[in-house]
Length: 483
Ligand code: C5P
Image 1 (tube, rainbow, N blue to C red):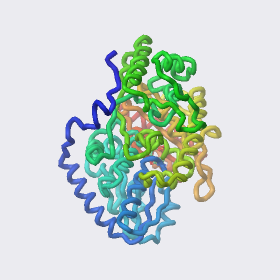
Image 2: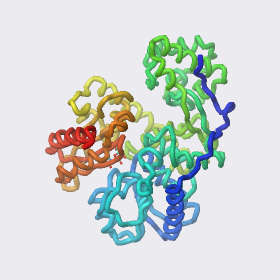
Image 3: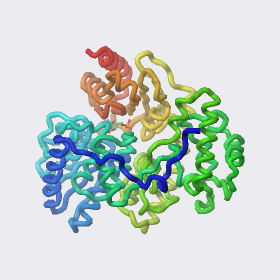
Image 4: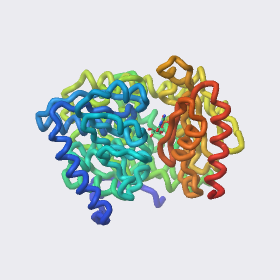
């Protein structure tokens, strides 16, 4: 079989070609250095960050920088920067926004010193803003907010990479590659080429194989007997399969297997895919991932994609501050934060499993897009994740999910909307961030939304949902016809 894991013993994290900064990227870094001076001149800033993995990572990098510099700060995480928050922070003297701020012109009304670190689409913002998009760097694909924050403060490169992976920027390219290079050179990041399934270092081997469905492996994914047989056929001496509730140290994990055992597993999986006529899927089994040797092996902070899921679990379940503590705790001493984060992750996984089962049965084809009505079934915090997991990489239209949102400041019931596309659709001109923003502006009445080309969201008054769906369909149509 041509496909085998090339693990780090064979490729000790080397970057093949050193990343050469383009002139606009050099200019961006110069602007970051200026922003750093401004930030470190602050006396007691309020750090306001988004609650998803990239927002938590970005907020944590800023907070570590202040902690290291001995500067007092306060921090607050939010789900969205709406009028209510703008009014709340009106009298603050110094504010740093992370992963948001560029999308709401009302930041111009703030009277104190403001630094915005964002990578979302932005327009009409006059405050100091570090946003890759303003320098011709693709903020959706080539630098996340956490990456931009690293470019400013130059600490916690592992957290920066985790934020990027959490924002679907994997495999890292463009300016992200430069950040990665800083990580590799400092020894804080190792690139591995291995099986891309989730949980190489933190999941019991059996569940690692059982619950991985990207790609879906017939007879193994969601097939306990099949997965057990594959492990046995590879001659792997089982320690304990465990489940996610038993003591972690007893679990047999893929990451602990020797090279020979790993190779046997990858070859066996590839052979099954080939046998089932899925040769192109076999090629996607192995890919690049990023591990952090200074973090605890066997914990979810050891590998970027697992780490970002842990942070998402914290944020999406109302505990983004726990995610920040885990990020800021590279030495592993904050065991309380780590344990809380881990139990949130177990809860998160269960909700995602239930959400995916619901989506598989209930997604409707509405012509212009697929539609998932998750109201009363799927929590607003994870509707976007479910849409992203449900959408096939080859799907010909995006998916839109709705869920019960938090009521507006005046008590008006709101609907949370999440949309996801794939790279195929981006190539056809789909830009969900613009489509959602245009749609919300068309509706007005408190509808607010935005995001990236591949993932975007909104909050819309309940009575406007049908109008939203109609206008969104029209907007997507226009994009694909290049109007
Ligand atoms: O909430 P969800 O995961 O679907 O969000 C996808 C993207 O859309 C995120 O980057 C988020 O910041 C953005 N978004 C936004 N305004 C909203 C909701 C989401 O800009 N009201």
